[in-house]
Image 1 (cartoon, helix red, strand yellow):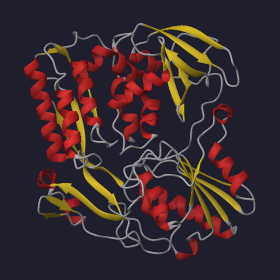
Image 2 (image 1 turned 135 degrees about the vertical axis):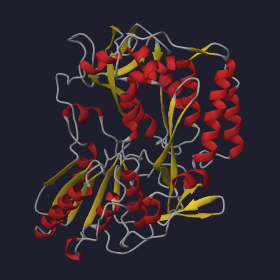
Image 3 (image 1 turned 90 degrees about the horizontal axis):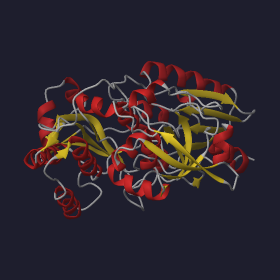
Image 4 (image 1 turned 90 degrees about the vertical axis):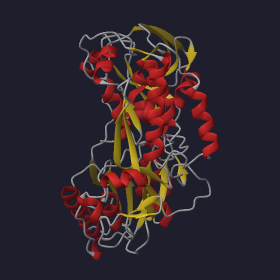
Length: 474
């Protein structure tokens, strides 16, 4: 699944009674800290990727000094998240042990609102509390418990690992699990005073909402008075005689199914002599490696090198060296790290997916417009990177949540901290795209910046698609 939705699932699970949270001694907290730091340095290729080592180490030391005697596991978990955020890699995450999650889940201390960020504007996406006619989808949140949303966001950002310094990735994470992050950042509240504002209305009104249990949030997850704007995995439609629209909102699709769908769609595009193709990947959080290559093969007939290199630290390579996929991918140790065999996009190599190149008659050669957003991550962001590096299409939308220069993902090393029992997943494969950006450590920047507007969100319209139709195709 997309990592961005994993954290929400980690906490919104069981809520059975269990003993109160364990308190850690200072020695236990320090032992867990050093255990995790050692695992990071041995396995994670991204720890010093975006920030100089001296600067990162200083930040690590600064967090370390805040460890104290008698810390609750939840408080230590906050420090763990702050450490993981220093990797600047969105595939990195931690979760509390099952016992700790159940302990938190029994407390009615979670905000009863699901939030969607439109740019940096937070609006109500779902409501999980008791019926309240004043709460409806699309209300703008101005403050919670007297603190403006801008200040809340600023305090939460240090706990969210993002790819490099993407300006959108953290907001996407907040959208997926805002009640969780608010609880992590500000501690338990049993009630919340929230200031709201309606679209195109100057009046501000306040409501007092009771906190909910995690399980209650799951059970009451529901749509509001308007239909929630959700995207299907794939979608196709012909807008007019010369314009077609394809949405590939995930690469977490079985390769065989994606091959069949793409072949059928591009056959139709060729038959109908489509001149303009709008390709929507704004909700594509990645998935099966190689699926992004297959989609690109229907758009670009010329071979090019996708990755500058694919690497892994020495220790995780040695632990996996005997696996069949390591031999198939031609991994080999080169000094202090391992590298995967070289290949170009249009070679016969498509990882374990079994893809092959499409018939040349199905490769689209007309005008291409690619829609991107904050949720464009992992393999979705790699696809956007390939579009940008080749100049194959016009990018419209928002900076991707995934980095233009690639990511650390693929295989993961999972560790459990000995005393807090916090589980941590560390991605170990560095996929370095073959690019040299003018601005490093950012997402893929669009040619035309078009965020989803507040009004279009309420109406269920795709702002980016509408921009292409109104402004670029005439």
